[in-house]
Image (cartoon, rainbow, N blue to C red; front, side, top):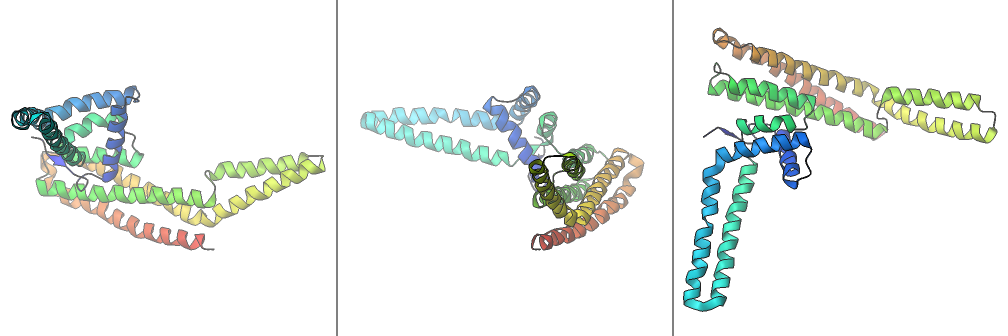
Length: 287
C-alpha cells in the first residue's frame, strides 16, 4: 500500500486543485487535458483502493438478503422498510468512506493528476521540490518530513503574497499600472486635440477619474513593490531548493540538513515582511 498524505502533509491548496479537477472530470464537462488526467487517476485510484471498493459493493448482498428474510417474517411492508434501512446504512458507509478519501492522496495519484491541475507558478515549483523529496533514496523519514514542512510553509507564504497583491489591485481599482498610465496619456491627448467644448469636458472628466484611480494605486506603490520583491524571493528560494534537492547524491547526505537553513531563513524573512505589508495595506484602506 502506498503512503497516503493528508492536507497536513501536502498543502491544502493542492488538494483544492485536485478536487476541482476530479469534480470537473466527473461532471463530464472536462477538456481533453483534464479528461486524460482524470482517466489516468481513476486507474491509479482503483489500483490503490480496489479492495475497499469491492468490500463496499459486496455490501449490497446483505442489503438484498436482509430484505428477502424480512419478507418471510413480515410481508411486503417489512421487506421494503428493511431494504430502505439497510440501503441507507450502505450508502452512508460509502459516503463516509468517500469523504475520508477526499482528505487522502497518494503520490502516485498526484502524479497522475498533475498534468491536468490548474496550478500557479509557486504551486508548480512546490510540487517539483516535493517530488524530489518523496523520490529521494538519500533522505530518511525524519528529513523528508522536515523538508515537507519547510516547503509547506514556503507555499503558504507565497499564497499570502499572491493574496496581498490581489488585494492591493482590488483596493486601488488598478489591475495594471502600465496600462493605467497609458490610459491617462491617451485621455490627455484626446482632451487636448478636441475642438468641441462638450467633448473636451467629457474627456477631462474621464481623465480626472483615471487619475483618481491612479492616485489610489500610488498610495499602494511601495507595498506593491515590496510584495513583488518578496514574491520573487520566494520563487528564487523554491528554484534554489529544487536544484539542491535534484542534486542530492549518496555523498551529500550530511549537506541536506545544512541546505535546509537558507530556505527557512528566507521564509522567516518573507513571513515577517508579509505581516508588515498586510498591516500597511489595512492602514492605507482607512485613510
